[in-house]
Structure formats: structure tokens, C-alpha cells
Image (tube, rainbow, N blue to C red; front, top):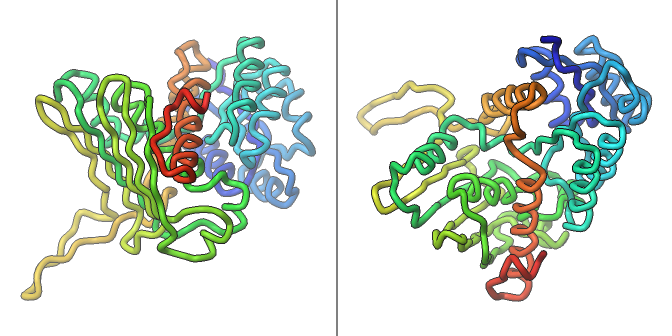
Length: 335
């Protein structure tokens, strides 16, 4: 079959990564064009990959040699670009979060459904082999009835303050991955959220209205309880672990190491460090994510639907309300 020709919108860190992976490591896909509002960013990616630099979004959407659009722009532009992509009749890949309010998300869902286009949301951690192993053990019934899910998700350093100004805060830019993961692992919707947090890493994060340390407890329709702990600074590296505990056993994903070597001396044993950031930790999951996108373009169902993109945002908004009002929040209160 002919390769899926993808126009990449947004050439910042995540957009550049996606474009490079598609161009070099995803069988059945190729980059047709790139666009960014910052001309220098798209020019650099276009030159490096030998692809066309579009002058505006419309050029990508109207191009006959673009089958699908990867929306990797700033969060506040995602839905408008999704609507425009739907109106152009092209398939879409949309990075998370879809938006920072549910009304915008619902507008995007309505446009995609009206146009009948396939859409995949960029929750890449579903495709991580270790995390997926945990989910597969649950789905196979190996753990019996799931009682508890526990996620530790800790970044090695905080993002720039400028990013936090528009990211929606920790529950929408960071924990949103974990909210997706607890739904994925349990196959059960969240009904209630209780969240608490603090500013323990950098006072400047608190000054922009965000948190850098948080714990969230979620109740599911199935009766399972999930707990998530987050920190924006883990000095030892990128710490990402998922555990499911059930009536018949447990399964857990551990952090991969940068190497499998070990040093032993009279002072004890010492091993290599964890990967430092997500570009080191999750490349295999991004590749699997794009393989799934190609399969979707060949007729397979979307592995991460717009509904899957909406639900974690609702949980994140509930978490923020819980912190501010110091009480458990029902998801039904959010919408």
C-alpha cells in the first residue's frame, strides 16, 4: 500500500520528534509537509528532513499530497486545527491534552464525527511495552478483580515557567497521562477524584498558580481505587511506574535503565541511572503509537479515541476543583 502522507503542524520539541520518527522509523508513513507559526522552527525541520515547509496551516490542509495531519501545536490551538482538519476531510493525530475545557473538546468531537474522519489522540504511554504488559495481565484476568492501581510519575526537572502559564497546570499537562493510564489499565471509568498538592520544588511554580507535588485518589465504576503521585523534580531521573493489584495477584512496570551493567565494590553495588527525560524513556512507545496510526489509516479502529482524550481532561479538571475546594469531586460535577 502507498505510505500515509502526514502533514506535521507544530515543530517544537514534540512536533520535531514526531516528524523525525515518521520520516525515519515508521514503515508505511512519510512526512509530506511541516508547518509552524515560528517560521524558523518549521524551516529547520523541513531542511533536516528534506520535506516541504508550508507557509500556513491552510496549505497543509488543502494539499492533495497530505492524507493526515499531526496536530502538535500549543494546546490552545488543538481544537481549532482539529475542526479545520475535519472540514478538510483528512485524518488527524492530536497531541494531548485536547484542550483545557470540555466545551472546546466537545466542539472538536462534533466536527470529527460529522466529517467521519479517523482520529487518534497522542497518549503514547498506552503503547509502552512495560505499561501495556500490566494492562494486558489485567485484561487477561490474570490478576482477578482489580482492587488497586498505583502510579508514580515524576519528572527530572520542572518545565519552563512560560510553559506553565498556558499548560493548564500539573493535572492537565502532566498527570493527564496518568489519568489516561488508570482508565486504560482498569478498563473502568473514574467516578470520583480527591486531590491534594503542594509547592515543594520551586516557589515560582506556585506564583503562577500551579503545583509541583501532588497526590490523587480516584474511585472507578468497577469499585477499584487508583492512586497517583507526581513530582516535577526527581533528581535521579525520569521515574515512571505502574502497578495493578487484584484478588489473584499483581503486575508492575519498572523503570528501564540506561544500561544493564552493575558495579560491585567493598562499598556495595552501584548501577546505571534512569533515562533522564521522556525522549529517552518513551521512544519505543512513540514508534508503536505511529504504527497504530498507520493501521488506523488502513481500516483498524482508533486505539485512542477522542472520547479517550476527553475523559482524562475531565478527571484533571475535577482534580483542580478538589484541590481548590478541599473535597472529593464527582466527575458528574465536571460534565
